[in-house]
Image 1 (spheres, rainbow, N blue to C red):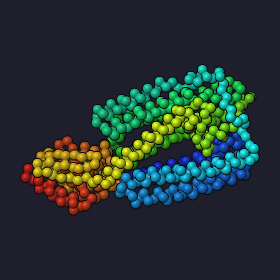
Image 2: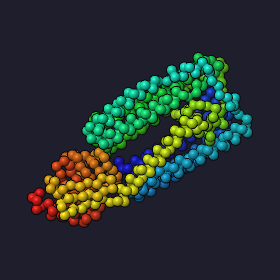
Image 3: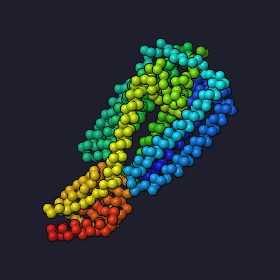
Image 4: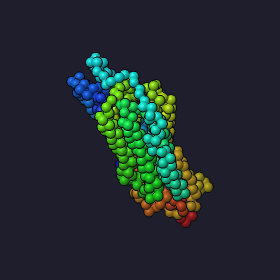
Length: 466
């Protein structure tokens, strides 16, 4: 699968999902959340609110259509991965911002309608706590100690990958260990979520709080186990080498993304369903109208709530309380990490795109391959065989870069085994140099330059009898 096609599919998935979430209706105690505003059930079906939803849906479809059209220029940039990568991120920021602004405008209009009609879900600025639950809240979640299981699996996979020199396997295992630690921290944050009172009945409150906390903590533990087991499976079976450049690998990665997403959506749906069922059985339910704590219906900011994370108002999952110190710290660290990651990959991609590999031979018979990140040198005395070919065997990346145009770094090729590639994949011929422990494959984009280099290598290796 082309990297450009993969990037486009990911971009469309993100855009479509976010726009669909913006239009979701979420049932809550005593009403419905529409466009980030809490309405009584009858009011949510009013003509004014439905017109707002229809207008947002129409504008969202237009935005998606415009997004599709503005992704097409990526095909023209496919020869330069650095430009594809930067263009993709610019596109993502622009269209996510545009989608957010569309929703924010609809949210403000919905808020104005609600105020004009005098609609309300219940009491305002009410934060109730059932004191009988305070001492029980840590018992309502899965013990954080269980996260030691996925962490140990990830660490074992790291050791195995390092011992077998599996660079990509080590990366997968390290990523799994990092994800386990992140989910562990999120699980701890769940334990600090304020115990909420839904009614005057402590039994109802205990049941709801326990169900929500345990459901989410089980989900986070399950995701950590899934990631660790996948990394261990890839390392111990060699999947990370056997399928990295094939469609199979993209399918596996797609499953890795889809399963957690589907699990989170199902978990959230079940938690809300259980909440509504239990609330219906409460004799004295507490209904509160907390629109004022949701900035544009999406960002939770409540200084009176010590919880770092709370359930989202629309869509599914949890969101941060930006009024809490932990929420601001988590958001800041995440934003800094994303910026540094994007900057690092962009710099790496620019170097690889614009600093072309070159091969030279000095007077001492040393061959040097100049490459931005994967330079290498060897002696002509090590050459066991020298050949020119128009095709290369299939293989996988171990530690390197592979785009639609070129492949550089450490690879594992069928028939040849370990190999260092410095090739333009669609510009044969390729110079194949077999060494005792690996194979070096090199070419220039210009065919004549490749043939001249091959002639020079052939001339200098023939006197040695090779």
